[in-house]
Amino acid sequence: MRRSEVGDRVALCATLAALLEVSAYPKPGNVHRTRDIPGTRYEHFLAGGIAMAPAMRELALRGYDVRRGSASWAEVEVGTHILEAVRDMLSWQRGGNVNLGVILLLAPLAAAGGSALREDAVDVGDLRAALKKVIRSTTPDDVAAVYEAIRLAVRPRVLGEVEELDVFDESAVERIREEGLTLLDVFRRCAHRDSICREWTSDFEITFTDGYPYLREAVEASGDVNSAVVDTFLLLLSKHPDSLIQRKSGAEKALEVSEKARRILDEGSMLSERGRELLWALDRELHEAGGALNPGTTADLTAASLFVLLLEGWRP
Image 1 (tube, rainbow, N blue to C red):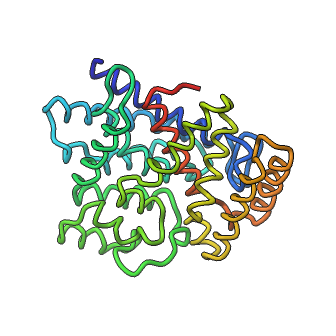
Image 2 (cartoon, rainbow, N blue to C red):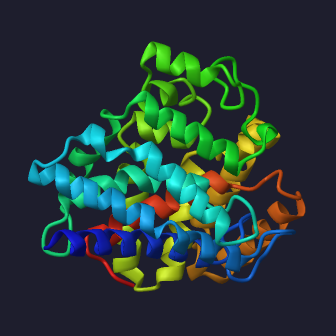
């Protein structure tokens, strides 16, 4: 494939992953095609997902250049393109932060995808091998850019209190530059309390071990994309208590939600009348909490799983 074709293919896979994730319904507690929340609507997520395409395309092009030997992984500048994607996301819709977490997960995958793509698809093993190189090649400049992206997208109270290198501490970036810290260094400090940070430090263990394999099997077995995406979301939520819920409402509440997700899967989820009944009930319950029980991180992990599947060549 030509360089431009690689960039286009990866960008299309990234945006489609974001669109399929937000369109799946009922994804309990999140915005989906039949559920909005005050100030943020389904169409805001559609616009935000499409807006990140230029940054994902550029990351793929740089990954392609690394493969061809005309650039190094450090020159990919993942952080700069995360910042660009966040700025584009905010400028193309008025619903606020709709996909910061998706961008943080899809950006390194896009660079890896540009390196691993062969004849319209990637080998998932090659993709993860390239991803490991992306993750280990960031610089303090990448950290500074990601910090700026987070400050643009979220309010301080959403992230909770941290002991050091607080995104909203003006001296943090100076210290990062002085100590030569990378994104991997920084994410290691928050991996115990945030699943996105944990993905970066584990070479995307949840995505590659839980989300993507389950999603692939689900779409092959049923042919129903919506059910497969919802069930993947439920599986991830059942196995990994949502870190956004933990920050807002505590670990006990997060575990309660995970247990309810497991029960829905045990009851057949979208493929049984009882499962659908429980699914819609949980969607109502979580939304009635007014954002305190929003499993947003699980949605981000679902989008990453979709991205891997699309890069592998699957099409809805």
